[in-house]
Length: 611
Image (cartoon, rainbow, N blue to C red; front, side, top):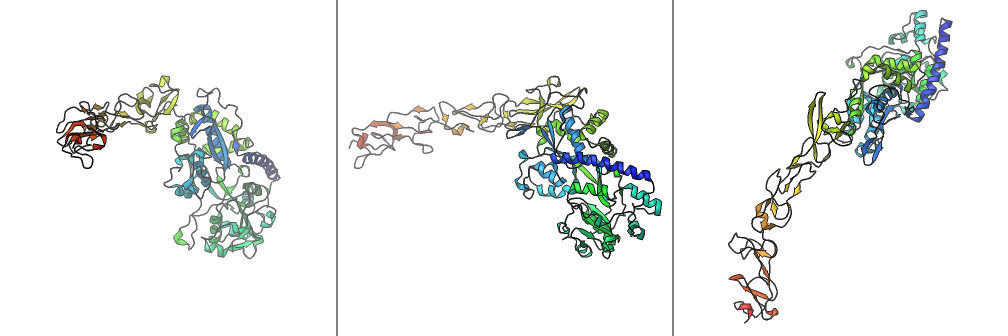
């Protein structure tokens, strides 16, 4: 590589030293997976600062900090740290950051509590590793979302973070691009330049054999089953490098392209090399640390994305490609890599548990300029995520203040109401919002500050057994609510009935009748109680059963439409007068049961079976 200015070499060496410091700091954090360890407050003098902090009650006995998941790269860590600081110091909720995901897909599975990504049907959101993720690349989350369709643990997509992501092939060092233009008027940031013999002469790029000591993934790890032309046209060299068709004959003269642990955009790069006859030899680094080290040591082409600060001091330059129409080529070449949406996601049901943190995540939006400034500041501060985040919050209050929900901005759709250790009816006495308890409903409330909601008791005639509801349910027939605030309507007592919806009381059975069970719905369920009967052909009051007769519930004198009173053993009555009862001279003469029945060989027309 020809660099014309000695000063440029000195500047490059200084950049390498600083990048080494950044790498040590960054990798150490990745190994722990936990960020924001310093709990020195960022904005203790801000009017919004909260000294008192709560834990998240996630259900089933779990109480702890809000867990913020992050992918293992700098922009995700910065977004998570800024959010965590605001959650703790402004919203008043304990928070922790877990940088344990290697991909957007993995982050969504961690949000849903999936221990086995191949089984999204057995995920448990209560046991989820994360509650919120601030940076998910939508283009890589599609398969995870499709796997969750119909599953109640499907995480909730909030909205875009505001800025777009980009990923493409880069010349690792701007100094190389500048030198090529100065010496040979070669535009290394343009794809057609790579067919020039001057590029292949080894003046500007290292060769693959110079990276032989770097750990690389084997060719067999890349699944090309869906790309038969790539399998046919590319040759695996030394078990790790894919040589493009333009350099099969002399792979040692090819320009090395290195991508990351997951073969990031490898198929895209291979398709472009195939279509545009670029003399490239491509490989995937065995780890993120190996990937981040190679461009610092040698001049190569590489995968890189925005936003990220790993190679900021190298000032990589993107190689531009044209948009390709699939109708013009026989292979499924992807379009020139453009921008993609970066979104925020929350655990299913989180809105009802911590509504203010959920609103903060939904409203958090940064521009392309905001995130670019943060990336630059991270380099200036040697990779200290906490320092950069605190400084940004201190100097950009006018931005983040728009994200902060009013803590008493309660949402009726979530069944919330004003709360301060108990439910209150105005903002003056309120501290926050909380879901209404069973027996209450969320009701809209307006004051000089705008819209909110309060939790009112369910009125008489209604109840509500669920929490977080905006309406109460009318009592069903057989039930009533004679006082406000019931979580369940009461059953009508025995001897009472109710045929209506929304009753506040039950109607007593007529005369001395009663019901067999609680919860009777109509007067037809009223009848004579045990030990009483209603005379035949009469709707009068129930009469006491005469001695010698067993009157069960609903007893009616020989009416035929209800339980008939039965005689006790040793007693007898005539069929014509069933309730005129006689005591038999001998108990064995009268077996009891129905009227007019005597023992065998006794005359049932004789009083007390006497003959």
